[in-house]
Amino acid sequence: MSELKFEMAGVLGTGLLAALFSSIRVERIDAHHYERLRAAGEPLIFVFWHGQLLPLVHAHRNEGVIVLVSQHADGEYITRVLRRNGFGAVRGSSTRGATKGLKGLIRAARSGRDLALTPDGPRGPARVMKAGALAVAQATGLPIVPLAVGSSSGWRLRSWDGFLVPRPLSTIRIQYAPPVRVPRDADRDALEGLGVSVEATLNAMTDDLAGRVDR
Image (cartoon, rainbow, N blue to C red; front, side, top):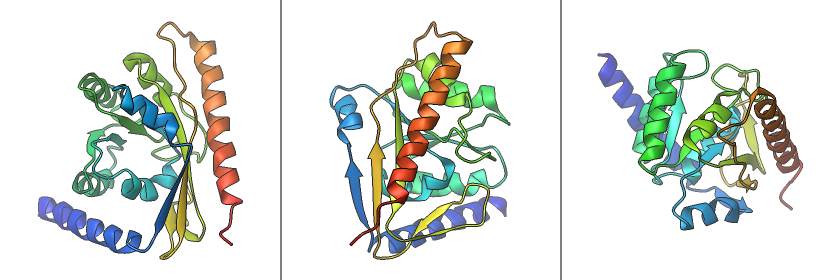
């Protein structure tokens, strides 16, 4: 019964997403920061805040990106929708299944796949960087590409992350920052400094995009 429930949720969720985004325009800012890496055949790690996931499922669908999804019960619903939109999924988080998740991401990186992580997930606090993404970057050697999402019009759910749902006919803007590389020999202080820097970049881009309104 659970399998049928999850599968139906995946089908329904994918249909709703397709309907919602059929009238939404996507604008990419500084996309060359990740396009150059892909052109060179170098996998990367997308890092973004948890509340901005929905528009990115649409914008980066069918690219084979591997997403780290929480092992909490609702994670299976998210996994089904992701897979129907051309993503892969590894289950784990900073709170549950951390070792399993890290091993799965390392395997995906070695096979040449891009990764995607939400460093404030799965339960917050919102827009606060946890160490997991940096640990993955250090272990895999892949560059981190921070990105942020804004919408000209949208709803914010009353959830811990203020989950963004763009309105029909709106424009979603995705801004990409320059790649950040984590040295294999980085010590605790260096990692902490990189975390502060990435968090500041994500928050600055998020705030900037939130201030832009279509004319």
